[in-house]
Amino acid sequence: MTIAVIIIAVVVVAIVVFAAVALRRRKEAKLDLRRAEAKEQRDLAEVGELEAQRQSAEAEERAARAKREELAAQQQQLAAARSRANVDDLRSRADEVDPDVESG
Image (cartoon, rainbow, N blue to C red; front, side, top):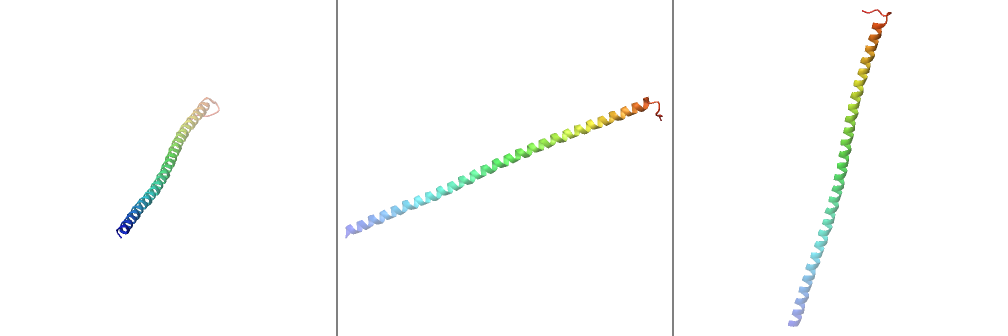
């Protein structure tokens, strides 16, 4: 009878140890899955960050290009104004020189 009790106790202890090991493995497997999911989310966040940086760089580049275009347009307006002033001066000079044009 005592041998049977010892055998039962050993079997119960073995079952408890086996269950504890199985639970630990299951817990570790769940943790590994969560770690993998967290890594995937971090990777996606990194990709999103890189895309946001690319878009920001493109926007800055576009803004700089627009500023250069604006400055070029202003320079062209000034050149056109100078050309008009030269034309007006030439016409005035021609009128001064022309004997057929009455002054005043």
